[in-house]
Image 1 (tube, rainbow, N blue to C red):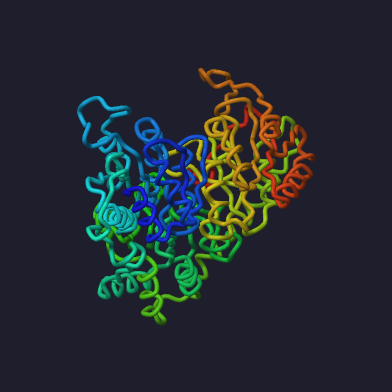
Image 2: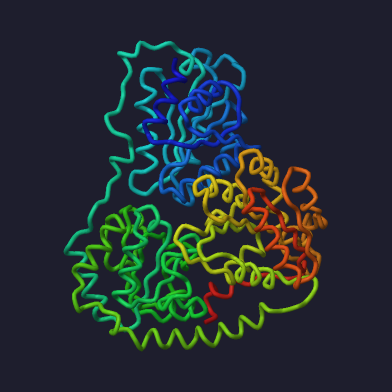
Length: 545
């Protein structure tokens, strides 16, 4: 049967986990996959399934898989897939569909799902013949991984899934998609030009993002930063490529570093609003840009790039390290690092005083400080919300690459808990914390049930400021949600619940919750915070040092 081929095709691709909600016509394929030993994690909303697959992909550096029934089930993937598209994450979404033989006749849940999915994904197609199911699954995985990664969608009509097939007619790929993943090298001439440019620099910086994750380039970039002595700044989701308390990170001097840099090495990240599009006033008008990216279209989209190197980030960085010689060495930029270190020391001391406030209601910065001081260095942190996302970004460091998850450039609310559960499924031995705003938690909060049923213990902390964003003047319509007793909701679903109103009670509550998590139970700490506390993106503004 076609559905059995679909399960075997997933097994051939190395899939060991998928996220889904049961429903026709995919149920038989889901059962067949589970019978083959593939773990199926059923969730409470298909949006969350796509988001869990997203986080799973990031932590495993391989495609994450989600499945849904036809019609509204598949359409519910939409926000999660769009978010994956904006974050360049390889998610493979499989959606059941009405039978091809009844297209245009008003079949149950008939809808042009393929048309709906095309703008939300990197690639979308439909399986038209059962014998080609393994071929199409392989193609979907190849498309998800090829070049700049991204989500893909495969439409699975019911009459194709339930067709009987002569095994001899089946088209089986010879290799899984992962075996054909490319690692193209950069042009040696362009690398020489880049090294010559860096050798004449006085104030260089390197900036990087999630492309370093997908190319497996974290170690190569860390070696380059150490060898070259260049300050490193990353996108929010690219954090941890080097420990953020290391000698080449100066987070409080970020604006100064970018504004005064004379040469900028851009590795595996888009030059979007996060980095002021690579232009003044975020950067100096005369800053010279070197850009490494696997997608030539990304380089072409930045007219101020002086040297573009098309290639895999890890391969190109290894080429640069091998060819640098004495041209680019740490001692060359010592004075530049000392200037940034002085700014870092001064501002860090002032910031520490600010976040140590004992005010009540609790300031979100104090909550973030307590979390910072409590979290293990190798913990995975998923952050989701408005104010708490910005406060957490300023306060809580990341020391391991890939261990920071958030709503990304699409600003998607509701990702926090699904990301945390996808990360826990991918890394069951890791300590996973989810830091939520109360508004964003409400979008996918029922996934606490998924955590309990599938034994995915995570620690959830909610900044309970009574609604969406801060609102000192009470001018925002629809802002107020009230102070929901999420800890009681958690307990009703089989989790441990804690409620905190005083700053000195945060740490003990975190410790009790963490003990529960280590014992195999999901725990939620509901912390009432100041509704008037508005986050300022201090370290990311264009004018402040």
